[in-house]
Image 1 (cartoon, one colour):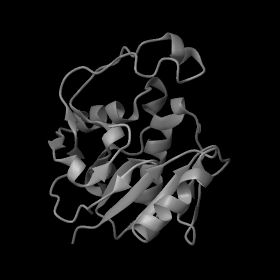
Image 2 (cartoon, one colour):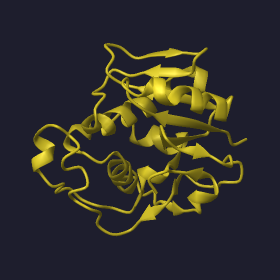
Image 3 (tube, one colour):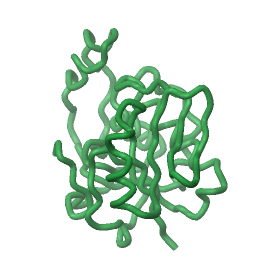
Length: 195
């Protein structure tokens, strides 16, 4: 049976601003992730996952990869067949009970904006356009779904330090194992204030 865990990605400076809204909206099948910790830990009562990673914008690929790695290796999450990655300001308007596939979302098939991150990073990335590959990917700002089956094929993976776009990186990893993204009407399920 299919079951989706909704994974809201935030950071320590914002968790108090978003946690109550997410908790009240979801009630179950969710967790909130923040980074910047010395070791990974999960508080089952609050549904907060603390990850040992860079907690800034530049650490998003690391945070997402390490989050997925934690989830597929922790027995408390064995019942989930899919994870839905969301930003902390997103709203779930309908659960993904009717989805089929391993990698679904708002698919982008052509090269993306190589300068999207510039001015947001506060380090060397501010000066450098992204010069990596673009493969078809599910755009992270809209939210996307990945199955635990395909995550088991791409993880562990530690090459995230060469990437600035977490969603493009996930698409790149999926492409390497022959998994193509599936276009769905993501706005029927999720609402993003930015998209």
